[in-house]
Image (cartoon, rainbow, N blue to C red; front, side, top):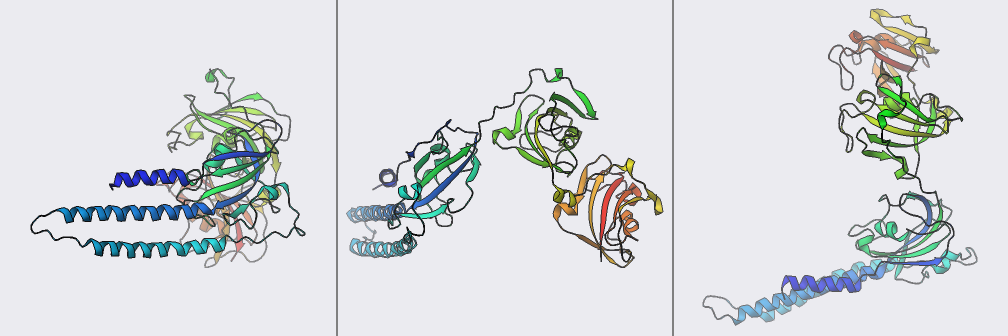
Length: 476
């Protein structure tokens, strides 16, 4: 039998043995049916269909048989040739060898089967201790060894939250959950091709067909997408900073966005051409950002200033206020960006504020003149022995350019930085600025280029840059 015939036979067998994709509603829900793009929450029970593992073994056995038959056909062809100098193949020996090989392979394939059956022995549920729920009543019986429970969310867990249609779950769920209503319960029969495929994970062998019971707990309403303005240049822009223009579509009346606030926003971003490159509405979930943490592009840090909850603001962000010369998958280098941002909530988290450094307003600080052109301001007093040359000084720090761009922070890494004072391991501005600090003291250092990285610069720091540091001395 040719390899093509073997393939066709295996393909037909696979089609016959694999469970078909099937969706069955066992409890009706109410409300609007869900669709792709909605943020939903579900409870579920997940089972491996163990017969699919047995089926896979059967398909492998069939493939072995077909290969043996193909080998025998070739051997018979050789025997029928009466060509001088060609040694005839001993078909009896070949048969015997093939049979032994088949027996050996069959034995090796039966051993994992015993292990699977052992795993499949699910203990019976004590009905007195745990009364059966509706979901339990429609689940496979604990004594049904065709199914093995490998994951569930019901025993005191929060429901699983995800956005439908974003590729966050297996294909069988993406297709099988569409159209459900809150409170509805469905059974999903998922062939391995729509599950984990040839991959395996804990409790799920490769090529496993799956069975699910899924209950839709709740769903957020679908979000209307933002629309790019037909005449973006015609909006009533005002200049918020060099390279940033803003336009207030709606002025909010709630709490203001403050430095250290945790902001929840919905946004959509476009290139100036109108091509969308990202939107929180596509995933049905607002973006959370901390204002002043340096985690956003400069256009957002400045653009959010002055907004209040409920407000909607448009940003026109120049490359210098955006991603500059850096290119991303959908954002070319040196791109001007358009954002529509809706501020949903603004909450100050004291714990977050206590562990962050914020870009200082140097106009409100009282600076002292240090040596060699260094300037410093003490914003938190310390006590104890002052830092001296030879001490291993431990500090938390954050560094900015004068335009507010944060280029480094030990707090972001959650790791104190240590160095030996006077050993020349840090820039001169630090050697001078940290010396004399008391444990617990915090300073703002203004470091001129000659005490920093000079005309050459370093990494994201351009040559000739004056640097601003917040430094807290933790002691030796």
